[in-house]
Length: 152
Image (cartoon, rainbow, N blue to C red; front, side, top):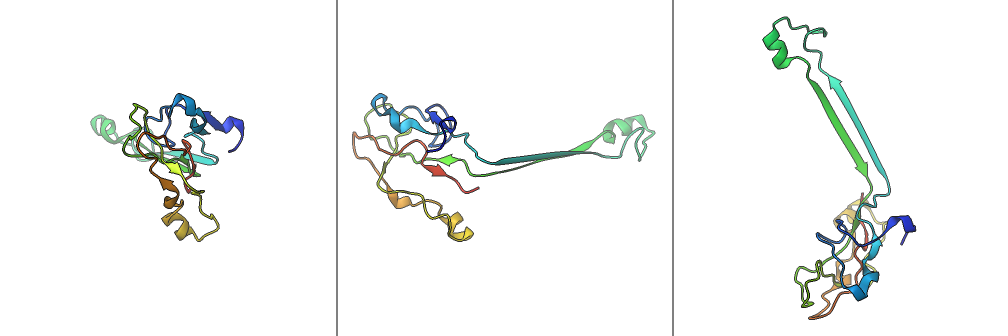
């Protein structure tokens, strides 16, 4: 499951769906999973370029009204590259007869597919959808809050 510092015991995060309340007080082990903020690798770069328009710059504008309108502008950009965030599956219909948020399905097999496949195959299907089944009326599913990581 990873290091203890990368695990989370519930909370309001995006891995597993909106809300992410506890499944049931007696099933708290299902809420112990990867944090929705667990992004293993992240690179962020930013830059700012000041346009050479305006008073005291390469393209000096003597007119004060025109200088106020077009002088002193800059262009900036931010780029972010990161590996995939954790994901989880939820049921669209709550059949538990409780007010539990984000009901989860039953996990019948390991949904993680071989990551050694071609990039196109991996991006078209990065987990096995047949490993999830509806838990049935009045039952809680056994899937954890976060099951795997998205491609990144």
